Amino acid sequence: MNASRASKKSSDTQAREQKDARRSGAQRNGAQRIGARRIAVIGAGMAGIACARTLMQAGHDVHVYERLPQAGGRMRSVNTEHGSFDIGAQYFTVRDLRFELALQTVPGLCRPWSVSTLRVLDAQGRQSSAAPAPTEHHWVAVPDMQSLPLAWAAPLWDAGRLHLGQRVIRLEHATGPGGWSLHVETADATSQAVPGFDAVVLALPAPQARQLLQTTPLALPLVQDMAAVEMAPCWTLTLSYPMAAQAGLSTLGPQWNAARTTHARAAWVARESSKPGRMQSERWVVHASPQWSQEHRADDGPRVLAKMQKAFGEVTRIRVAPRHASAYLWPHAQTLSPLGRSHMWSASASIGLCGDWCLGRRVEDAFVSGLEMALAIA
Ligand SMILES: Cc1cc2nc3c(=O)[nH]c(=O)nc-3n(C[C@H](O)[C@H](O)[C@H](O)COP(=O)(O)OP(=O)(O)OC[C@H]3O[C@@H](n4cnc5c(N)ncnc54)[C@H](O)[C@@H]3O)c2cc1C
Image 1 (cartoon, rainbow, N blue to C red):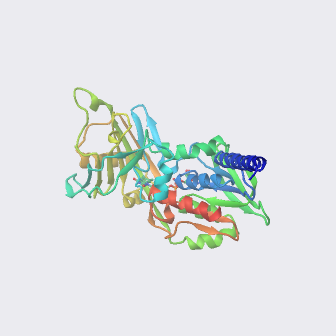
Image 2: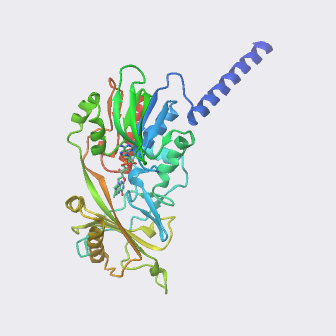
Image 3: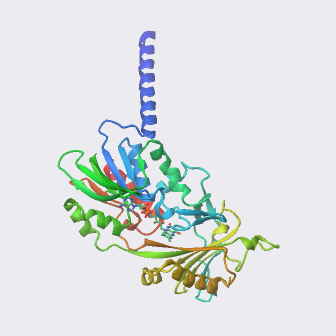
């Protein structure tokens, strides 16, 4: 090989490498590839974000619509003057290798929460069975659970692809490429049509997905396929005891930090302040059982607050009045009967569904569902 050919070859190689590097950098930043499709993802919980970030990395022109002013869905955390509360997901497991690899993209964001304190209690707060053996870590994001979906949503936000405070109220389809339109309502109740999508993904709890699918005849077969999926509500109570930090007292009540109970009202009780990376001020979260939440779904907040606080006292023996207490209803919290496969995709109609309910009821189920939905399209 002569010198000029060698230098030509090396400059060709260099140019190709630079082009590849530019292309992969562009894809990371949300630029599109040839053959890219314009895709709407509805819902910015873990499933929607996992789906959208994968589609964006594959070079598609993906837009996420979320009805709330922030991403995270059921991994939401709320801030109070006494510290934050994870009002939805409490921790997550890492069983799927792809989830583990995705978590490596946000090093240091997630930390294990001590599982040795997880108890199973009866209705009076007595230990009713041995704590399950700690076979796996219970992971939490720091400084709160919502930080994980927010971190993964950041590239979508930076690229102007995450549309918050936009509730999709109707789907419409016209034949041909770019045939899907979303009808979107903002917080001030104004609505507009957003046309030109080649595909639509609903990353919503099953009952909300069903409602939206019913607005387009093209999606009716999907509604039939998900008929057996059931989800239950969950009333959540948050309590703050900042006074516990005074006069040499660092915690109130029991020595354990998290417990599942057979109490009719309080199914899960956890010391929020025991999670890593949180403010130390004593705080508790209580989740009511699916059955009790269903029976009291229509009750008002103050009534539920009083009942759940009583249950909390019975389980923990903490009878002191909290400085802060509030109750929150998740209307579609927990899957009772899952779909049994990772996602639904109609190639003929270019519409799909994902969410935790496809596989189960965990954060990881939502991630895997969103990822596999994206892989089915990409
Ligand atoms: C009380 C509670 C405790 C839990 N505890 C745990 C736990 O300890 N461990 C665990 O692994 N999992 C737990 N989970 C489950 C976990 O939170 C979920 O599995 C996961 O977060 C679901 O993600 P998702 O993306 O499927 O749905 P979601 O997080 O519900 O996301 C759906 C998104 O769609 C948005 N949306 C709805 N309708 C529209 C519309 N019309 N237009 C636009 N946007 C819309 C919603 O606002 C939401 O942001 C818990 C859940 C709850 C509620």
